[in-house]
Image (cartoon, rainbow, N blue to C red; front, side):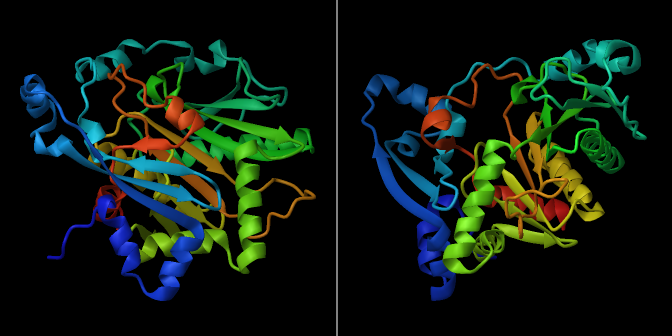
Length: 361
């Protein structure tokens, strides 16, 4: 059995890559490794040992800082941060809170939610409503037939996505200038959901795609102009060369090196096909069943629904999924660093890809 890889060893792993693979990595990512030291007084030793396992664990801390030079995303990894003290409610209370919420408006969508001007789109496991407090002019909700958002199946996940994009196409038929779709699922309040009942949301923009999607398109286009290669192909190749990617049924899955927050996974597909829907389910199933995640964000972005002036050649269907932490934890995971500097991450991408490989392949 080989040595277990870790994000703390990333610089050494990159240095040992063949020259062409190392050059490709360095064309996308920059690494900086440093050691942070502390000198705690003896009065703290017992407290440190209780929270972090040993005194030695905190005296010298290796921090790995990674920047994506194409998209200017960044992450700072220190796995010790997962052990810092936090105020957490009893975990068994989550199931109780979900069960107590049964009977709300999303349990009665036809009578307790508004519909769009073209009516509702009905799936086999979901139905749409018009978002009463809209993100954008065209802002819909996909309400799941299952109240518990964590009680999903492969069939249900596929239906939620199909219903959402059927709604987006209906919007485009109604308003041909609305052509930029974005599907999002915030699971539980920790991920930003104001209602517990399982639901996703879909928006369709006019004029240009949503800023971060458009920013990614421009970054990928600039990379293609500069290198003559696909950014998304090279992004996958870089992760694959380090053992941080796998491909299942034509869907490329990455444990991302510059995650926005914990355990971020990217899925790249040529189209919104059955393989992608299945892969989304498998990743979420691994999240909940294998990694103990109970609150997460899912974002699905894709090229426009109709012709535009911008160049979308080579832009894939891209899904980003990340863990938002324990819903019973009072400490928020998005703060000034994530908003204005660089994400601070405690999960190791190599542990994420290990779990995915065992669960998905």
